[in-house]
Length: 454
Image (tube, rainbow, N blue to C red; front, side):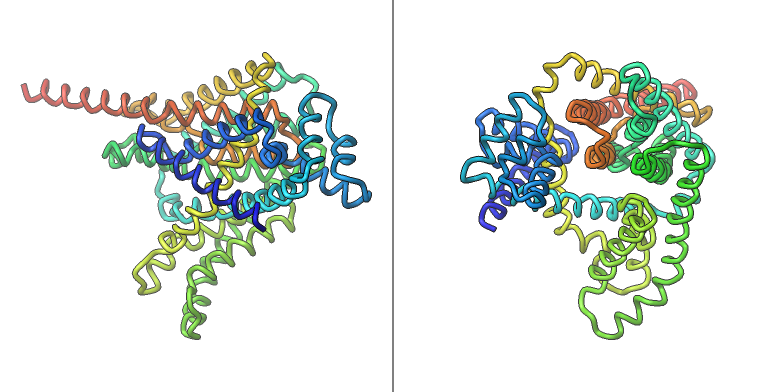
């Protein structure tokens, strides 16, 4: 336990410092957590620190540990058997051969499991911040923006993969296209709030579209994940998985909205403490488990649980704090582990290969173009460019999609690094661009008002 405790302390401290620095320059904290992970992972790897060297390998390190247990061989023997030849393999073998090898495997296994739990927790929180009532009120314009903002990045992503990686499987291309469909509603909402323009038409359209985008994106993820696992792509297979995902998501929400008001007050009258925390997380874990039982991603169930409980505890129970506030300390403890770990596993040396740079540049261009073309779907009387830019940031949602793809073996080290760079760029450029565009719109409106009064 000792190295695990030290690792968690260092991850938490580095995440806090990285987030604080990013917020000082007007950027979201999640970006700081990701960048500090990239910095620590690559510097420690260069210094040949054994635990970081192993943690940096991600799924390969866990495959090595599993192979060593199953075949009764040493960690070094398993690494030599499974790792591709190259300087990276020699460094990994050296890390596992020393006294710190078993400790490094223990830290990697624990941090990996905690990060997977953090993903479930994060999507549960996203669901809590997504109002079912508001989803019904987003209107035609928000829905059209969301639809175009999912279809266009998916189509452009498929085209880009066909050009750059012509030998890849359809399921692989669909997964990359699915990563590009994501939108981080939290980052855009934060920028609108800081600017004090949340009541403008553009802000309402973007935030409504981002909510719908989350739902559509999760459905896309559910479909492509199941296709990757099955290994085949057919019209009837896609249709069946889509129907299964839709039925599960909306069926669980409907059942939960009916059951929760009847069940929780009775549990509360029995005198149980921390009903919100226990029932909320319990529902998220149960629905995540049910999602996996029918072949969907766990985060689909966690998101559904958040939608179910979005307003219930605030409306029905006379407590001081909302469920979101109750979970805030746990969020600060668990969620940064995922983002720091994603940063730790970005291998900057992969960018020495021009193919990785090309992949990153094309994915970023496709990610930007695919969301900008969604602006005109909002119709007349609004700033199309502001709406398109508001849909740009992939943030935590894009990272979650990429991490799932890497766990499934769809996303390689080079592709993972390219995707993370795309996430960083789209997240970095959105706040300053959105501030510039919204201020320009405000000045234009003031100028038009002065002209009319004159």
